[in-house]
Length: 226
Image (cartoon, rainbow, N blue to C red; front, side, top):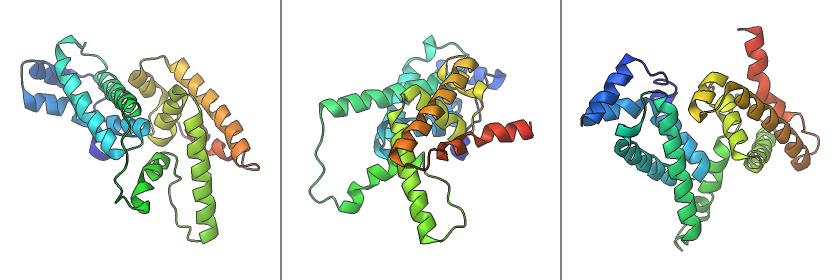
C-alpha cells in the first residue's frame, strides 16, 4: 500500500519511544509516529467526504488534534486512535459544510463538476483488467455505479468494515483494532452488510443479485490457502 499502508499498527518499543519523544516536543518523532497511518486515515476521510480536498483538510485537522492530545493518549493502538480522530474531523467538516453550503464557481466546467461523483465511486470501482470490449467496460461501469449507490445506503459502520476488509485488505483483528470493537462485531457487520448489499443490488439491477458475492471471495481464498 502507498505511503505506509498497513505498517505501524502494532505498538512496539520503537513506536512507544516515538510517542515519548513526541510528547517531549520532537517534531520529527511526531512525524514518524503517524506517517505509517496517513494513507489509511486519508482514505477513510475521503470515503466520508467524497472530496480529496476535504479529505486533505480532515487529515490536517486530525494531525493537529492528535498533536494536542498526545499527553492524554495511552500508548496502545495508536493507529486506531489516530484514524478515528481523522474520521471525526471529516464528519465535523461535513456538518459545517451542510450548515454553510458553498456554491460552485460559475466557471466550473461540466467535467470538473463530475469529479466529485467520480471520487465517490472509487472505493467500489472494480479493478480494471485486460478487458477492452466497450460492452464489458460499460457493464463494469454500470455495476460499479450500482455498487457505490448500494454501499452508500447501508449503515456507515457496516460499510466501513466491508471496505476495510474487502478493499483495503485488513483482517478481522486489524479492523477490530482500528474501530475499537470486538472481532465478533466486525464479522457480524461484514456479514450483515453483505446481505444488505445483495438485497440493494437486486433492487438496483435485477438479475445481478449475486454480484456482491465477489466481495466475499477473500474468505473462500483464505480457507483454501490459510
